[in-house]
Image (tube, rainbow, N blue to C red):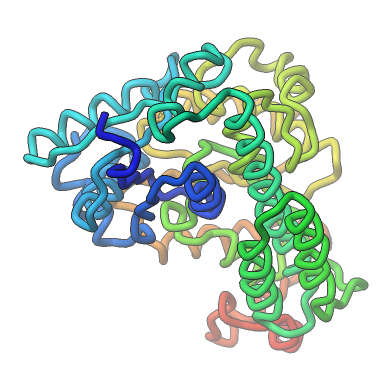
Length: 392
Ligand code: SF4
């Protein structure tokens, strides 16, 4: 590993993870080269150099690394892990591919905290000269508080958008709120900024009496966290006026205790919900997909959408169990599979059909706003709530 003052570190791009890492590496005094936002170019690079049979997240990650190395990064940090799914050796495969392509860099595998606090500490110690355990702990605490506040903003925005009176208000408020939070440095400033920025989201003009569908999103963590990989599905559904809750959040996923502070339901509880259908860990979020679907059904949600990367073993196991669960809990579940061949238009059509089905269940078969919009040859995805209402 090169000396700390020469390190230019990068990571995969995954949702708003870069906001947390920007803060964390800043506190550690390490230069962070943010990978450019994932794009078609990123995916093309991953497809070109990655193994064909690898799951979609590996290919996008590989593209992220190539773009960041080209931007000047010289150190890659990648999360490690262990079976049963292939995620644990992603890092090793990616490192080899990049070296074969001629890139020179240091590679840092961050094993989960639960695998040993000492190994976890040592990885960070190599980034910052004289870093004590005590100081690392303090830094992590403050950065995580900020990361959680970022997650909280997005979570709230997902809920509020379904009720917004004017199309786009929530998106604009979220942008402003994240900017405000990013500027906070000390623990006290972060606490105050978290409150104030959340207030910006809450102050969006809303029509709370509006009847909205409630949909839960479950599935593989990367697809849930990275909008590029799922064609910004939350935006599409939000613009259809659907109230959304997602069960995986960045800080819940990387926090050592996995007590799901943002989602609000601890992992142990999810595992208990899954137990009648799936009682052991199958890797990735397979068991969580089952447990969370049960939980959404019990909480009265209208439907659930599962996001599945093509070839993902844990989510395929979950997908094979979901039909039984749907029957038992009487909740419609839509499984969407993603790989590099998946097209946005096809996915939007399936989402529209699913939303129509959920409205029909609610209204005893009445024509929905989306269906009405379609009958008028209008693009439902781009309609604001007012236009949707008029379209029926
Ligand atoms: S959970 Fe699925 S998509 Fe994610 S790394 Fe494991 S096998 Fe691949």
